Amino acid sequence: MSTVMQLDWLKVDGNLVPLDFIGRVETFDQSIAELNRLAGIKLKPKHLRKGADQTFEHDRHGDTRKDKHYSNYYTPKTRKMVEERFHEEIKMFGYRFESEPQLPLL
Picture (cartoon, rainbow, N blue to C red):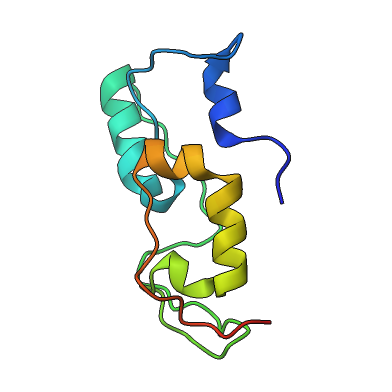
């Protein structure tokens, strides 16, 4: 797991820096559009994945659904690890887990 917490990038001397905008990877295109609007620029990043309608390759469990909630990829054990390690980020950014993880324990 990562040794640098996401919130550490938003702090100076342990205090959160006031920010006007925080983009999200999971809504990357919308985040870039908002950044462009706020900054008055036309940033057009190159994507490795060309289109939102592109089908993902099979994951290790044979699932091809690209709209599956991220928390469905956690086992109960890994969910607990993530909840403990990233509790501040989960709370601050409003992340949540689906009610029951879909994968078996490894």
